[in-house]
Length: 498
Length: 95
Image (cartoon, rainbow over all chains, first blue to last red; front, side, top):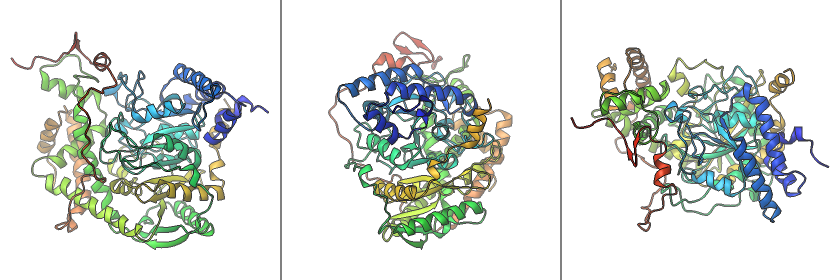
């Protein structure tokens, strides 16, 4: 029996893949349904900076032809969104910034190329905080993305559009990037699954750089299984990125057995702090009990340097950003102000006109941390603290397989709530940034809702290059619960009343 | 240690950012507030700790010295804000 077209956009990657394999639906039908859904919902949600309708339909036709020739694959014909910080050849790639407002990517990022080679269909470029700097997507120069669960709230950030697109069922999978939590925190805010892989697992070639020692590309989808299929394709060594690591990529989906038997789980006491939303703590503790029931052994552990992670992160990340963003000089690409009085003035004015406030603030902070007289006190100190944070994790992982924590201390906050106080915004990253400093894989998946009906995220962190263990734990929990089957009901009601 | 407005002006020059008077004032206050919060790092004894610049052991990547750029020169020049034929155009540098 054919699925009715109105439901196609709600399928998971696995469900759609099965229907495509059985030829019950075509990639073109699936893509059309997705584009229709985008058309109906985008005026309210604003997940995308650019919707690539014609490109998507051409790619969908090509996917159907490939299948007709006998090709198969879990992503063949699957509509995906790509964060607008990842280059897509011939398509505008803005990084959420006015300074790249007219930038058309001259080549594909390695992750883009791998997705397209696997037959995925790119329906658009998702909104994000400018240069991935932010925790709410409010720093985008283009739009304010709305949380599909409550339009007055942020979707999280910086990969907010990649998360809201999944929650609003505008596409089946997305790519995000995560420098301090930018995949996991929006995944938590929007009630979906997202994983930041181990640093070096995925190529950064063709990804607009924010903080090069921390940035990593990762997948977002409705389910753990969907994320395994996406990571399977994008992971691996790339000669064009010398920080990508040359080691084999395991078969992630094969390890999902629905069990947590024998899994040793550490719960860090420093992650249950005063000021966190009580419902978040309750939901996470309940999730841990479920994992215990599924065969895991749970112990309390300590990550004693957690309280130093935010200063260390914001000094290292902004220092790297100030250096990376020096390339926006208005010469080879990007915005240039029209009339200028010499080269220096042209740089200063173009950058003043092209960068938003948060980007300027971080460039200033990073330049200060690197400047003569302050380098040792700030930048070098932060790098030493990074060592201490990394050692904390190494000690815990000597006796534990994964660490389980809340993804964020609260559910999605209101639009505008934290924009006037940058430090408050930075502090909302408390549970995710240590994982970037230590380079570890970290996944967020839904583990409940607060009294306002907003999703709560559970974070599972693993040893370097042990994504399969993280996936196995997450999948076991997901199979034992039904949070991932809930859809943004507020959105459904509003869509129906139109 | 309070951050001065002059220091902010100096940093902005190093960062090649032209700030408005309002931005200067706001950033002076905000960066000072942020840096004060970051002062807690000073409490940690890191005398014998090595810094971590990068989390993975990176090996030098060797390859044959052949052009591998996927995009051709014309595609790379197409995004230039000002061009003169095959050249990027900039304001006069030497008077």
